[in-house]
Length: 579
Image (cartoon, rainbow, N blue to C red):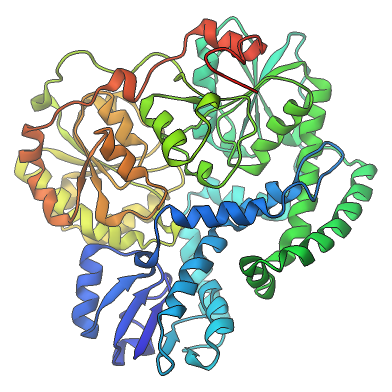
């Protein structure tokens, strides 16, 4: 059997592979329904995404096992476990190793595998398959590499590219700390809100508004976590302004580096770790350790200079915003975790160290406990602010928008252009047929210029006239004008459901495998469409739409009294919490 592995950055229509005969084509990315249908006709053979070889949530059980194997072996002076904090950077590679192993195990001795370009996938298979693996090009040319980086750059907003630049070239704040104004410490105790992204900041600030009499300090690890207009009781600072150069950290780094070499030698008895070592991925560990220690020092200085009475973290999957939770725990300061989105799949393989995890409603609580295996004793329902639930029927006839909530699909190696080809022409036709307008609401990480170019390429002029591109924060005005929402797995589905807006989930395009769509479907947050043809049926589906039980399932606000208890630590063991 002759098998082609098509890299996400390669086109099936351009390259020496497009003129050859194949017995099977496997897409290393994720395309749309029309994409695979056309490829099957073009190559006259089965075409499937590599994703189809996944085993569901069991992938994450193995990731958790690998993470557990190195715990408590790389502790710093504060008791922080740097294997636990750093290993999370490799979780996607560990998942892929299992999938690639299953692919290789199904091959026969005479099967030949061809790959369109070198990558992590092919590096892994090279060690497993040996002479059965063939490359169309051993390494990309300088021009080809430059064009690839240019294409990648156009997918991000300019502000996001600036973030990437600083993350790469100033990870320890060596430069940025020199240009950040030093904040005058507050005289009053503050609740610390660590953040790296604007959506995290918005969620944390929403909780702060629940207790307006208390003071909060939002500290952003990067510019995208900065809020220009925060709540009146929330001060905002940059973590770079707390960064310092401590000679003792250099000595600690060398000690931990030696310990890492011993730990790595022990961990290489685990097949996934051994493979990451052979692929030279683990060679980045010392660099990640160095910048992690620098960020830890900055957070330490926050605790030294500010009167921190509690920590509320809306993203403890991010190692650098998890650090203050760990530092607070060691200082016996109350810690609360929540998530800025509808669900956090990171709990499938991480350990949360917060005293309490706040879930916005029964859907999130059920996901944390039943799906992720978090102890129910540590989870409490308590959303931020008032419920967005609209009591009473909306006049859907006056809602003029079909709103497509877009996402940065390319980050997950998905083919964003093919997702758009599956969806936008059909949605635009539906807008024309129903006399409505198609609104494409962009995620903060999407480039407006790139998506505009894509829309112009895919839609006819008539369809373009019915289409509007919207960026920025999701507004109440946009939601109230939405007749129907459609998305792959955006958190916006819960925002729609909470307001009685029918929302449809594109199940055939699911690119995350954390069980989000299944959970949304279980709690009737959205109706799952199984193919793009079902988009035309949306008007009929809306006629039978039943609003989910919003108050308890999706959004049950926490009281200000309860939040004050959690911040004080006095109520930490109430409501069935145990140490």
